[in-house]
Amino acid sequence: MVIRAVITATFLLTGCALLEPPDIVAVDGIVAEALKAARAPGPEQKAALAAAQAAFEKNPVAPNRLRLATMLAVLPPPLRDDPRAADLLESLASASSPGYGRFAALLAGQLSERQRLARELERSTRERERSDKERDKREEALRQQIEAMQAIERGILEREEKLRRRQR
Image (tube, rainbow, N blue to C red; front, side, top):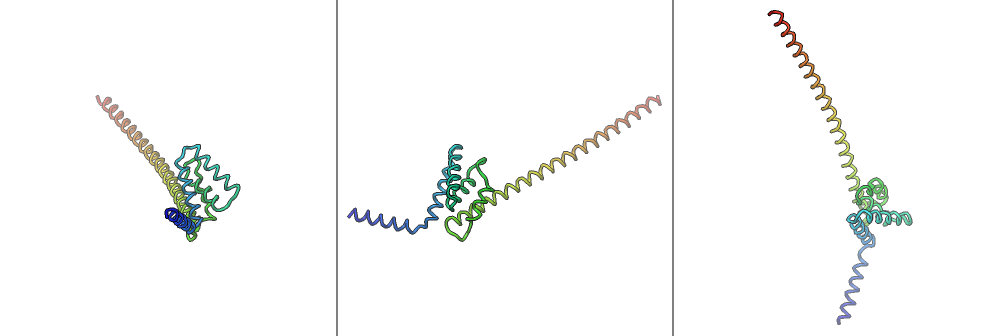
């Protein structure tokens, strides 16, 4: 009786595994690997990236392409390479394709947004620096005007003092 239940459960689990598309299982494995690498110390991150790179170079199929792109996208700098990850994802990204396509589209969208925010931050920083330089120039011009007015005031006071001395 117990053996029959175990056999039945095994068949049911096998059947459920067969119903799950292999792309989705592979994507899940890629995500798990990327999460593990992202949380690992630096040397392990480098090793995971090198392994993904080697697998892609050996066999540039969709899973290896997605694995490498995911590693390049989730690892911290200096290992992160958003432009290269985006290039790798370009041929895979398809929101209407389950598994690799949807995940690649999601990841490509996130990379695009991160790059847009980086450009915006850079633009904002340049504008702030330009604004700071302009403010500094205005402050310097005002300082020079104040110094000039103080010099004029000193000159007027000196002339008044000379006139008073002459009148005495």
